[in-house]
Amino acid sequence: YTTPFRSRRHRPAMGAYLSQSSRKPKPQVMIHGLLSAGKTTLMHKMLEHSERTQVSENQPTIGFYVYSLPLKDVELVSFCNQYVNSTILRLYRHYFKSISGVVWMVDSTAKESFKESRELLERFLGCSELNGAPLLVLANKQDSDEALSVDEVAEALHLAKIAVKTGRNWCIQGCSAKNLTKKDEILDWVKKEVKLAAGSGGEENKR
Image 1 (cartoon, helix red, strand yellow):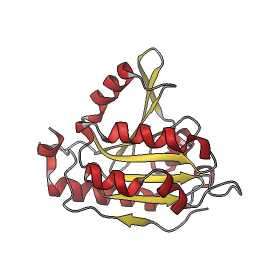
Image 2 (cartoon, rainbow, N blue to C red):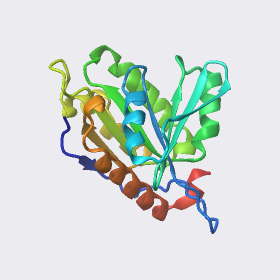
Image 3 (cartoon, rainbow, N blue to C red):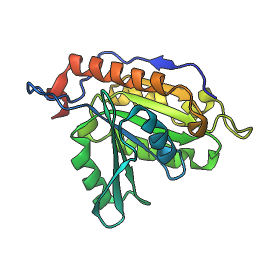
């Protein structure tokens, strides 16, 4: 179950990092959100777009996992840990340097967690390493009767205010990660916005 894409643009858009070398690496897109928001489910759904048979897993330190999935034009990256303290955030920022776009997963049925999700999202987007990276919010579990609407989720997360404050393009999409049918549209939006952001400022805005 999905709802139509709802794009919001902030101008001027700031650039996301893309290598200026002759052989450019694939842009990395981070998938994140609170526990049980649907990150792992989305990553495994995206396996259908990859030649891989499983998502790669790396554990740079105890309690911190990095999952990656190279696709045709982008590489999806997801982090897993229970709490984001100052030490974990420093680890995140190391990886943020190569992130060109952000996909933020939200459990639309978990109204009590919206404030925590919003605060963590603001904390992440406040990192200079993510300057200008386009933001796609996936309001997950829209197939549940308990789910808030896409507009209600956007309002609860203060997305318009966050986008203006951090100077980035954004979009919110309702979905059910376990029954995802519009994987191509999700990837196409991210790739298009990453390309636009890179053309608007490139590497210099990641410094």
